[in-house]
Each structure stands twice: as C-alpha cells, then as structure tokens.
Image (cartoon, rainbow, N blue to C red; front, top):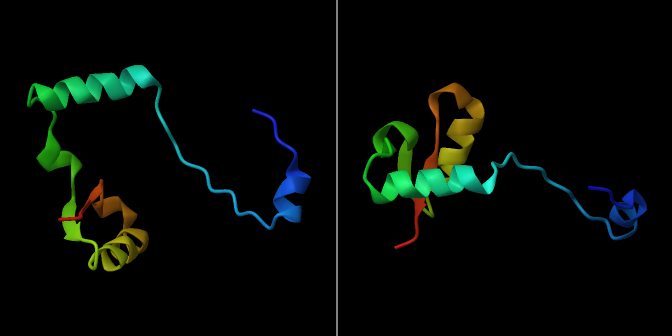
Length: 75
C-alpha cells in the first residue's frame, strides 16, 4: 500500500497499525467457534465490563505475557 505522508501532517492524523490475518484464517476460527472446537477458555484471559476496560488494558500493558485476549462486555 502506498500513501502520501504529507497528508498525515497536514491533517494532523495519527496512524495506528494492527496485525491481521487473511480471510481464510477468520473463516477457520468462525467454523471452530460454531462447532464449539475453539479453545475459548485458553484464548480469553479476562472478561470485563466497559467500566473495567481501562484497568484491564493497563494491566495488559504492564504485563503483556499474562494476557491473551480481553473481552469487553457491553450488556
């Protein structure tokens, strides 16, 4: 992908990156979830409310080796 970096400066934009996976990986995980074969308990380190999310993210930032995924409940 190419982009014009001067636009970031002119518009004072912040650019954040993220790792991702190809679509077939997402399809495989969705299939595993549907078939109840995905190891959710191993993949999700904690489930928190929206109010608890900042503290959970701070804990993850302080000690990233002990966190796989943080699930934020919105109900």
